[in-house]
Length: 145
Image 1 (cartoon, helix red, strand yellow):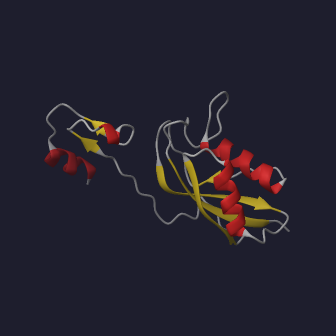
Image 2: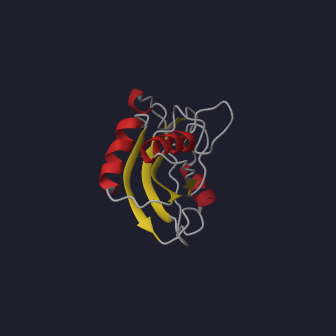
């Protein structure tokens, strides 16, 4: 019987067209599937906890995959994946879960962070929206609540 494994990962979405596999576009899911398939010598189809759009980053993203053979060295798998994956993707860990656990449907919560700045910052490129107009922070907070 197949075993299910969760993957905890983080990524800089700048060079990708989102999480989900898309024709003629580089995606996180495709990169992860290809790397895992190569290392595990089996076709892997990772299921993500959600989808991110083009250029969106994830600090803590979960995915799962099923595999017939057990993985004895999860730390070694983490190491190998991080050596092979695009530098913009980092595997934090793999862990075995029950076959009923699902990366998307078993999630207890999701949170999103939107960063806005009014100062030009070369170190925040692709990390924050630069707004030149005056912001009404009170109205923004009211709309977000």
